[in-house]
Amino acid sequence: MKKRVLALTLAFTLAASALAGCGGDKKEETKAPETKAAGEETKAPAGDDEKEETKAPAGGDEKEETKAPADGDEKEETKAPVASGESKGVIKLGGVAPMTGQYAEYGKGFDIGFSKAIDEINAAGGVNGYTFEISIEDTQSDPVNSSTMATKFAEDEEVMAILGDFSSGACKANAEICDRYGIVQLSPTASASDYASMSKYCFGIMGRQDVEAPFLAKYVLKEYLKAQKIAVIRVDSDWGKSCYDNFIAQAEKEGLEVTVETYATGEKDFSSLITKMQAENPDVLVVMDQGDPVADIFNQADAAGWEIQHVALGPGTSEQVAGRLGDKDNLIVTSPFFFDPEDAELAAWAEWFSSEAGFAPTIHPACAYDCIYLIAEAVKNIDGEVTRDALQEALANLPEYTGVTGAIKFEADGDIKRNYLICGIEGGEWKVLEGFEYGAAGF
Image 1 (tube, one colour):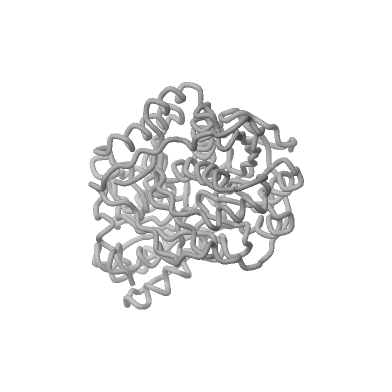
Image 2 (image 1 turned 135 degrees about the horizontal axis):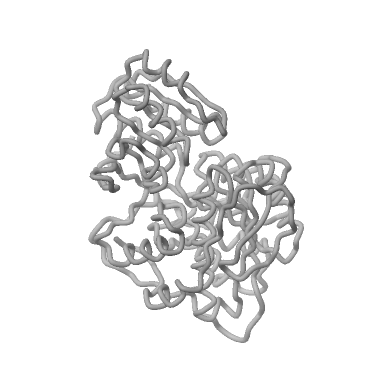
């Protein structure tokens, strides 16, 4: 699998020093962002706005769909960008992430991924005379909290870019702020198809729901599972709506019969929704969400005595979701990436992450790690002073970069397209059920 990953010697030397940012539980007092060297613990939440504008095309090249690396590709080892010249100072970054709340697994993963990459780059001498540091604020991935923190970073002229947030809704709420202050927001995980186009300063590397959700309908449900009647229970959020809208458009083309119910973020009792869906006698139950609700819905369906195939769009190959499931061998998901235990470099990265986080990584922390390297690559390509606008232009025109999660090349809107795997749990462990070639024919 082709990727650019820092030499393992350096990664493991630094592993002992990178600290994981923890999620706590309650955060009330909002503190000003506190600059930290990569890996220090972070703080707080709060609230603000939203908007829309289009991005200037990224560079002059024709855009290609980003393909995930296939097994067996020749490995290409990448070292952190090499420093040149005398020290020019520190490039400060602001991180927004759910360090507490139901998505804290992902926020902690962001913190560890960001910190690991920064430690590696700084230890190698930085980039063009610059080193990096990041301050991370807790948003619980709430749009209001995220906007408050994004504004705080945007108003600090020393902060060159914002990294995060986790959810598409939070990232979209920050788009107007980024546009107004002229500051990049690079999200590891926002996948709503209309996010990046809201401002030329908005970027994302997770891939888009207008590819993943149709893949679910055509290749997972219709072709792999041979299902006809589908029950969908989804979170009532901007991201959940984007998932479902893209899903149902393809499901109708495939002739699938779909029944859908929604629930509010933070809901714990899904019994009434499960009763309604069970009465429809579907072939498959699909949950569109991330984190604890995915496991809670499936566990409550099991408790109701409902024997049905479980499928999820959103959590990827999450160990925390898998760990909460009663029936661990009844879950199929889509994922643009998999930590293949047969790949020595990926296995080493996953082992390092697990030792820091206490749980195995999904694509989410790996995307956070890749985001830092993308910022570093952009800085390396800036001829002259590093400013917010120079960083935006350098990112938009960045040549294809191969990171831990595969090939990354920004499209004109500022996001990327990925290919997808079908993964499932067998014997209590995540496995690839069908590789990238399964959906190669497209739509």
